[in-house]
Image (cartoon, rainbow, N blue to C red):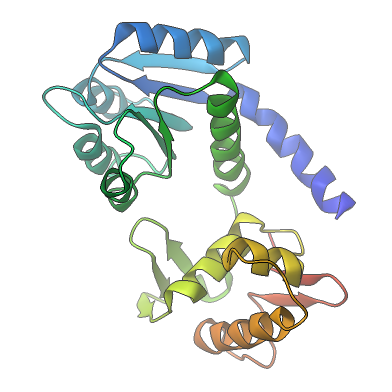
Length: 241
């Protein structure tokens, strides 16, 4: 585990070079967020609307993260996110006063990666920003998986060799979590508590093993000799870098 952390440390240090776009029609909020992020070393660009954000990306801007308000005149943040997704795979963090369950579902269902309700603290915002940047900047340059396997997080679909692989929601969640931890061995306990979101019990080990086996049968060329999801004896499961 220490070796895995050390390998990531150098990559994670690049987060301070990240380019972030703030999209909000309130100039006061843009200024406060920009100053906060700039004090942490990030490069920040402001956009007063979804249209301006689209113009920035169409003009060649390459953000590593987009902070996007939902309630904006002309084009809502959700609609803007759909259009932005055609131009970038950078994570989108919605910052909004709309915090009802249906608002969150609409945000996630249209390409958003995370959600932070207004008002929020500086610590909350920075934690979300760092988490999203870590995932994106550490993993965006990874080599393709064995057999051309690819996960589309927005649509929650998995492709292999150009064909859709039919996975259950739980199997998609398992694959997604292992990909986020790519290069590191994930223990059965960690996998269970983060994917099932339940307390780990002794019986949970068998639950994880059964689901990993079923997942391997669907994505591996030979489930008995897995090349994508490896077993690291004494440590757990791992997808190699």
